[in-house]
Length: 295
Image: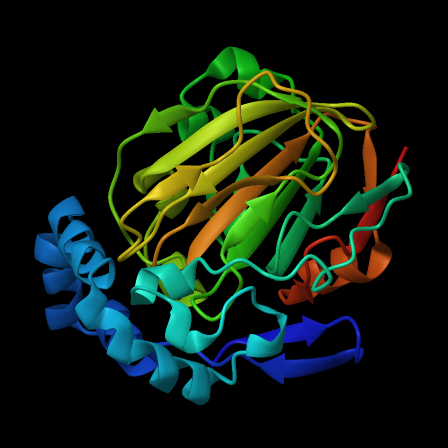
């Protein structure tokens, strides 16, 4: 059971988890963990399932998924019958009016829809994965020089569960450098898995890039793949001027995570998000929603 904080209602809710029984069995039983290490975390497993979800035959999974998880199709660009495959539906685009991006240049906005943790004054060698488990930014991006810029800065972890909108966006105007890719495993990024696999973010396939923001300094974007995520697709053009809210990329099927790092004294995260993080709860946020301010 995953409890999260709904900022709009100021209340706690229980997340609906796609494949919850299988997920719990995999990460909680000796046989499940053995299968995970031998097969599930391997690239071939996720690639094969991704291949299937790219095929027209997978369309029959769309409507049951919409009904089970109450997906709001009134805000999507296409109707359910118009998608060519399940993956085509999974990384669906939203109507331009579906999400309002806060235009105040001093407002820090969410890069997408999902569950958010926020950590301030971070120690690069002891970044929090979950309570009791940490990892290193230097190990995460394998570039100590870039990592050092974010010592004592701010870290945001946005988890996109399979029922969420799976495109991620730029939080400000600016330009973004080329993406660096790091091969890795395909563990789930669900909290169940985060409590079981040490340095999970450093184990999984991931990509990172430096975004030169006009108002928040150099922001480090790290996209982390997960079980059954066949691909991380970057749709932006490196070094080209970007606007706040422009799309950066999307994930194919599976739960995924985007981690942002800010340099010290650049942003102040809204107090409710920081407080919920300290209590161990993620806060549910939407693309374009204000989550902090410029310092």
